[in-house]
Length: 69
Image 1 (cartoon, rainbow, N blue to C red):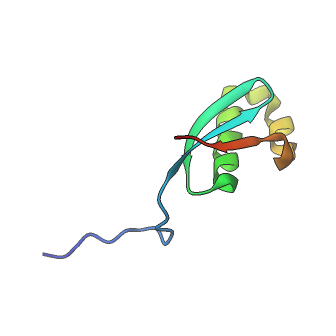
Image 2: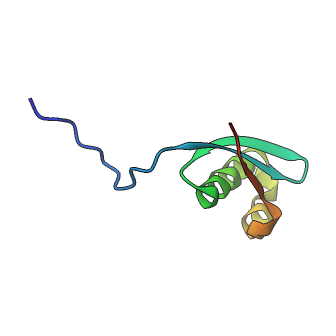
């Protein structure tokens, strides 16, 4: 029986992150802080579609990323 192969090439474990942008805080599972910011941008854009342009232009320094336990 063949072992099922993983389709991704990134085998790093997913970690919990708390990402804060202004008054919004998100808990996301990501491989690193940069990926946590990308996921948070997508969630913000989904929740606040009228602010899509503003969310996409936010500098990464506006995101406070903390590794959660």
